[in-house]
Image (cartoon, helix red, strand yellow):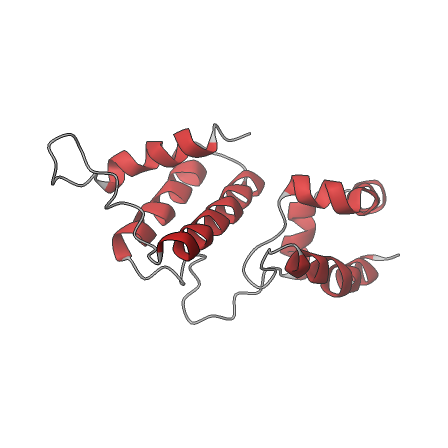
Length: 157
């Protein structure tokens, strides 16, 4: 299977399985653990035959596609403060902490699923308002929400 065949396999097989498992291949790549659980041989094939990680492969074949007017991975989040906090957290990981793009992509995917689940359960995507300080009315600022995401998700690997 050449690289072009791998791209076709990803789009025809892996993307369909992602959808079946509740992931959104139109906006995210699969977390490494999910890919390893479902397609361990595919990962090995990319590494052995093309010296590529899944992240390198995704970048080469252009997934996820960025066809939306708004290229934000959180374009579906209506609450502006929440959206800004999520994007700020990912920038923090990438720019200030120097994390690999694959780590940032995994966090992005996890956060998207978390927000989507939160929306379904709570009928809102405002993740910040419930996080009020001890004073009562003062909402946690976005600078304080970044560590909150890290605490909830654990340290990047």
